[in-house]
Amino acid sequence: MQSLGIPLALIVVAVSRSSCWAREMLPATRESCRNVPGSLGYPAIAAWNEFNGTISGRLVAVVPSAKFCRTLPGGACTDAQWSSGLFRSAIPGAMDQVNFEQGYDLTPPSLCLRNAKICGQGDVPIYSVEAETVADIQAAVKFATKHDLRVAVKSSGHDTLGRSTAPGSLLIRTTSFRTLTFTDSFYIGAKDIGSAVTMGSGVHSQTLYQQAKINRRAVLGPGAAATVCVAGGFVQGAGHSPLSPKLGLAADNAFEFDIVVASGELLKVNSISHSDLFYALRGGGSGSWGVIVSATFRTFPTFNATFASIALAASNDTAANALATIHAQHIFDMDSVRASHSFILSKNAATGGSTVALVIYLPDTTTAKSMALVGPFMHAALAVPGISLLSQNYSYVDINDPLFQSDDNTGGNGVLGSRLIPAQTYHNSPAKVGQVYEQLLNSGTTNIIEVVVAGGKVAENANISSAVHPAWRTAKAHLILANGWLDSASLAEIDVLRKKFKTQQLPILELISGPNAGSYSNEADVLEAEFPTTFFGQNYAKLSAIKAKYDPADLFIVGAGVGSERWDEWGICQV
Ligand SMILES: Cc1cc2nc3c(=O)[nH]c(=O)nc-3n(C[C@H](O)[C@H](O)[C@H](O)COP(=O)(O)OP(=O)(O)OC[C@H]3O[C@@H](n4cnc5c(N)ncnc54)[C@H](O)[C@@H]3O)c2cc1C
Ligand SMILES: *[C@@H]1O[C@H](CO)[C@@H](O)[C@H](O)[C@H]1NC(C)=O
Ligand SMILES: *[C@@H]1O[C@H](CO)[C@@H](O)[C@H](O)[C@H]1NC(C)=O
Ligand SMILES: *[C@@H]1O[C@H](CO)[C@@H](O)[C@H](O)[C@H]1NC(C)=O
Ligand SMILES: *[C@@H]1O[C@H](CO)[C@@H](O)[C@H](O)[C@H]1NC(C)=O
Ligand SMILES: *[C@@H]1O[C@H](CO)[C@@H](O)[C@H](O)[C@H]1NC(C)=O
Image (cartoon, rainbow, N blue to C red):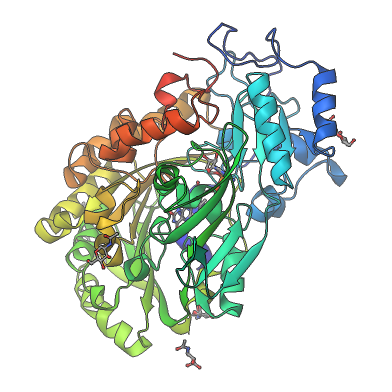
């Protein structure tokens, strides 16, 4: 059941087919463009070598993961390596969803598919600074500024919008920042604000949970993920956790950041020092503010929980409608214990039936009480013809045990689209939720992931001053649609799938989210038309002003991020 909580694991893992584009072109060189290979202002080899000397030889040439695999003994990655998040996190050019390594939109397209004989550079950077010290990061930021280079920042490569890679760029990779320290007393100025954990931006969620267990603490990290970096992209988006209804979002519990900003300065950012940047780093969008070295979060005493995984089958789309409606009717049943859960539907296009995986965390609740809380939903669901129980398992465990994952399932092609669904929708019109499921399934959707992590402490934290989208405070769930493809898909088919959320699925989803509703920027569609309001709501103007102050030259630009409206798709030319 491990992978059931992982949205992207549902995206089919690509099987290979060779394909090759040898020549490739980045956008035209203009005054308003950054320097890319071939531009007049692009550094010569001698300048790169000199720079490499200043960072202890930590500059590496970057290649797409498929090309990297060919340099291994045997000339290939095994299937296990290809799909391992841990393995991928050691490859500078790798993204977990390999479609983000592809330059579909370049002219001509530049691809590097698994086992391809010839590879283009695609959307991966040219060089990476494999940073080990703050000075390495500072040197990279200054070199990029001096030569007007496109910068990309990466910790894990998990990003579901592809924001940690960019063509023609200099990558700054923080994977080596792995320090992790728990304390009973963390100080902001002279004030002890309590127990905390400080972690480097390269610390994987599996390490965090493992160490939290040893230290008998509970922390806010991702559900069902091994290699997400909590102090990297996770917290900058907001960071929802299976513990959020009980303890709030990760951003709600962030105390401090150490970050290198565009000037090259290392800043200590908290409620009393650079408090405007502190506001932005908590929900203002991943990758737009600088290079985070480390972050500090509140910790809580550990606790036990019932962890339940239940698999149900729905024989057709009508039965899936009924199941999603019953789920919506019972979505508040476990609120008394501040439980969270995921309701993950996968349609089998061949049979027309669907399976639903429910993954539930019930803090401080025995298995007997948990079964009683889940019971009314189960009774109602199993009374419907066409809905059946495949398996169920309840266990009472240390909360860090089910949060720990040994690896992530990666290496496929896929994109997401999403909306935060208001609690009001479930209160007022649960049947509409089922209808939306049926319409989505009828129109070819195969993966619907409802992450029920809002309400409770997330709602109660509404008065915290941060860039977290206000829609989080009135939502009950984040609903994600995943659209995946195999390497054998044609460019035309891929184009349709990349635009499917915007053109086909969003109009249906808006029946329950409402128009102009919020979405969680870390699990979303990079092509959102109105990304400032969709991802940042009324906070966008304030975020733009903070961006102008700390990054006046737009060194840190990511797709659908603050300031990106001024740049082309690649962040290379101003528009
Ligand atoms: C299996 C899986 C499970 C997930 N589960 C959850 C979940 O439960 N809750 C949730 O909220 N999200 C979840 N996510 C989404 C996750 O929050 C995002 O993918 C997030 O962007 C990952 O951050 P990263 O740093 O690990 O990834 P990366 O791809 O390395 O980076 C993501 C973004 O952060 C920026 N960034 C990375 N490192 C730094 C740094 N050191 N300084 C500044 N910017 C940096 C990048 O530029 C990019 O914009 C999940 C994702 C996956 C793949
Ligand atoms: C940087 O220097 C190191 C050590 O000398 C060397 O191994 C590496 O290849 C150099 N990087 C590049 C891109 O030339
Ligand atoms: C969790 O449960 C175990 C076994 O029942 C028990 O020994 C332990 O004290 C509990 N831990 C907490 C924090 O309640
Ligand atoms: C869906 O399945 C149910 C239960 O098996 C059945 O009664 C119903 O006729 C089916 N609907 C369609 C449209 O096939
Ligand atoms: C039930 O879940 C527990 C804890 O996650 C696991 O150890 C056990 O193997 C599972 N049992 C079955 C039958 O799947
Ligand atoms: C927010 O409100 C809660 C009570 O609902 C209060 O305890 C807390 O101090 C408030 N926080 C802020 C930042 O105003």
